[in-house]
Length: 82
Image (tube, rainbow, N blue to C red; front, side, top):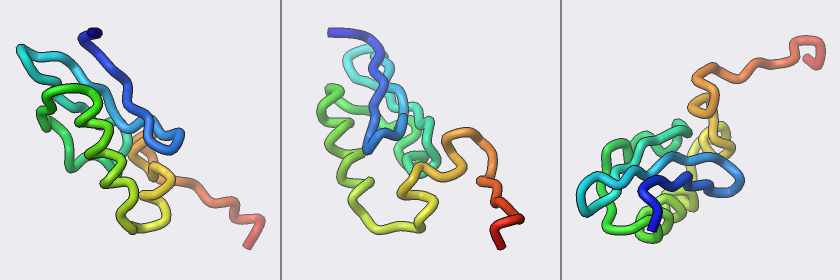
């Protein structure tokens, strides 16, 4: 097994799992998965299942797309379209 995994959910880079001892620590990349920051999982598949369950929950529209957590910036709007 590898000691690091990138987890993607619905084409969004959700976070990185890092093997620490006998479990994997989750480090969020996308804002909608920040609630899992520091969570420990016994294996990468358990982490992916938990993140997919979270992704299926209804939320704000920007959270479902990955929201500002992907780049650390708020989304910009095209003011000419208004």
